[in-house]
Length: 125
Image 1 (cartoon, helix red, strand yellow):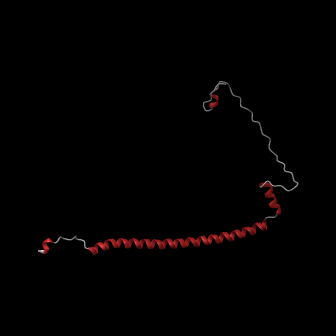
Image 2: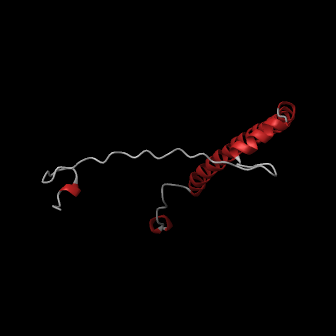
Image 3: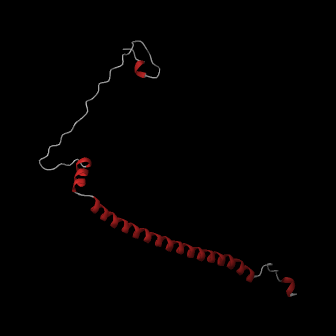
């Protein structure tokens, strides 16, 4: 008689339910760990590239300073200062030569002519 009143339990047993939740969680953890490892490796490679570029920049800037000292003399520094920075020596006078403005001949306008693309001709004077 006891069997008659017992309710039928579900078809899925508790162990199966645990595995159904555990397996996707385990898969997610593995995917996250693998992606974290890949990201850290990529970050290390980028840091190495940055270090190499900084070393190259430092070497080039040292060479550039040496090149400037070798090839520029006082005359060139003075020339650049005069032309680009508009500087002068003590006791010198600076003379500016400006070109003369050319006067353009004014166009003779015919009275009563209306030009459709020029709004100033729309108004009668």
